[in-house]
Length: 326
Image 1: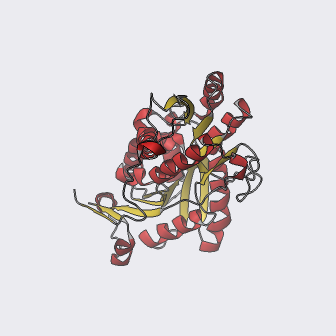
Image 2 (image 1 turned 90 degrees about the horizontal axis):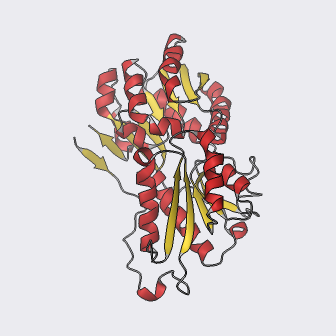
Image 3 (image 1 turned 180 degrees about the horizontal axis):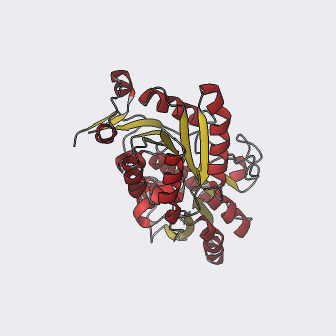
């Protein structure tokens, strides 16, 4: 398999001097980490976070201890796991989806929360504004409001004439609620009929795809959610078998066999979360740390899947891709 990459915004690793290390007065700082997925599905993102902390001078066991809790793709487990973390009295908690940030804030109302991805944080009451969060939560946005529109446009480019697109959503995830709203607001102007179907767990995926296929969906839109990320390989196989090209917001879906992904580089968001944690451990107030835009967007195409679906990808689209998987 040949891969072609355009790497954007990646700087050289900085060798920090011993004087810059984070240990203060011999104290080991406790960091909570509330992860919506599993070690298999989300371990790479936690690894990126750990690596960036190390680059910033932190060593686990010497300067920090990382308390990990995994929801295994079950959003309903987040409040209980957040309560477990609260009992450990962390100085800061890192999350990656809005539902986890909400659970952490409710369980630990005075503890700073850094979210590697945030969707509609103002609407959810997590922050007062992007520029001045004003509370205990800050972090990086999952996407711009225009992302879902761009994904729908890309679907039409990849399969011209597409007029019906099915969308899987987990309505217990506030991020999915916001993304569904954005997609439904954008679709009519593009001449697309959007059918959104709620998925409560991994066991619902096969039936959901069958329902969308029978309803005449010509393309599948998959937002970021712990259920879908955890089951991305199975989901990609089911979609291809059903003849549904799949568009997702994370490269992991294209790497797992989905047709295309366009969205943030989630590893970079997790690395950026380490910057927020560093600032907070050094005394910064999360109320004054602005919510940031994602550092990087990327387009990844899977030509092997395109061939299996009988789709010919335009050369102009191939030229725009950050990575092509063959």
